[in-house]
Image 1 (cartoon, rainbow, N blue to C red):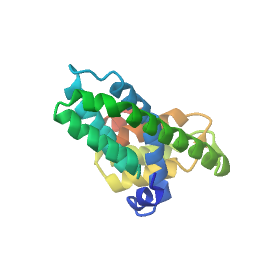
Image 2 (cartoon, helix red, strand yellow):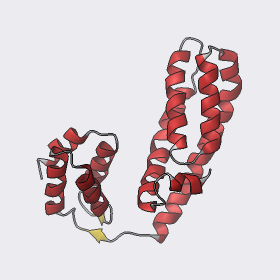
Image 3 (cartoon, rainbow, N blue to C red):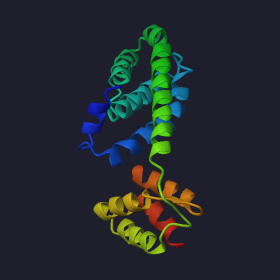
Image 4 (tube, one colour):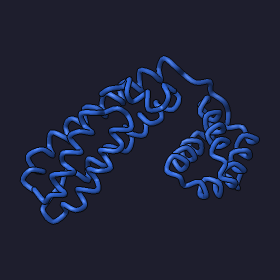
Length: 182
């Protein structure tokens, strides 16, 4: 993995890159499960899934996996089922190794960079985030999420994680609706 390249994609902002690594480590195993049962019948679905892996891998600097996924995308688009079968296991194994390394790195990083622990997220900050979501103010959303992420919470940590996830996948309206309760 070329972490220097991955970090450069986010202007060397570790606060942006680390969440991308966390997301990759969280969601990539599910992607790999979709790649395992490849068959001649589901080759068109395989193309879509391997294309997604290619993009997410490029987004963190996992160049070897990106290159393998690109090769498999091209082979599967061409309908070469045997070519996919002969390379798919290596792609999965290499990606699993990267996911494992990312998870280990994150555990180590988190143990050395513990966040302050608060009782709950600040209600005024949640209200500000709601307003930013309703107005699609992405700079305000990013600033509020960054502020919320500076702490761990005794209560409401699941809300912060959920909001962050929804915002990462551009489900801004859903985030705003959930914040209406706060």
